[in-house]
Image (tube, rainbow, N blue to C red; front, side, top):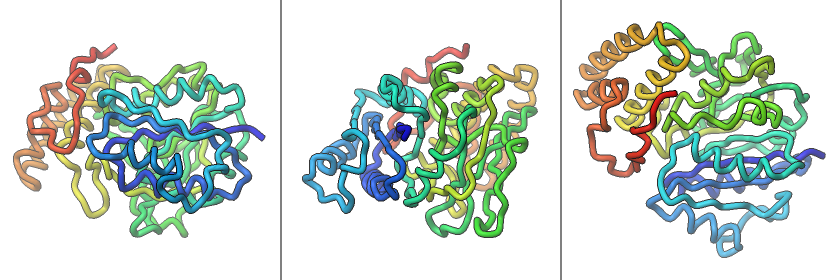
Length: 322
């Protein structure tokens, strides 16, 4: 049976990571997993908690023997951003010839027991595969099935956002432009052909950019293999009942313009116009700081507020757009 590598990038994930790991170990046993955790310089005790759990100091409800190999923990000296953190894990997993596909998974997710086996059972021959991501509360509401991109403005949208999972059909591949990085399965063929995740983006749009590098390999969707997501636990992404944090707004619009310059340079003017309109709208609704975060991000200015609990890698703002 083939082996699936799992990459989890953590940042201040002390409260989320152990439930995620426990759920992975509680799988039905028909899927073999190898898990690599890359910690992006958490300022809390995420690394210590994972070590205690892994060495048995913290009791696990499911034995680690379910893993094909012992869990690998890779603490980093600074916050590399999501894509760079993923790539640290992918480089390790690529060295294992048994691994046929790589699963990028957020630490604030819960995985049902049957999901990994269903992801492994899908036929080969794809670039990236998605699955249904539901909010953990309420767990019948879809956060995203897959994503679409409006190339005029660089704006992404979530397919089936807010719909009830029990009555909503899954998307057909023709509708899909990209797969959410919260739960994304990449084939070995794709990674070896397209390369690792683009690290120009600190947060957001890296999975959109990656999907466009797939060549002739298709995007696919695995039905009946959901996960449950506590959206934005580390970075303040929006949820059904919570607006995006200033940090999230800044990086979302910074990455949106990087994406447009790379893939749709003729749309940059309209992308900037959209961002200015969005900044005005958010300033009226949420306050001037929200609008300023959008403007600073899309124009590539330094993050205008104290990072407080969000660590920003200052070097990331100096990365050039290739």
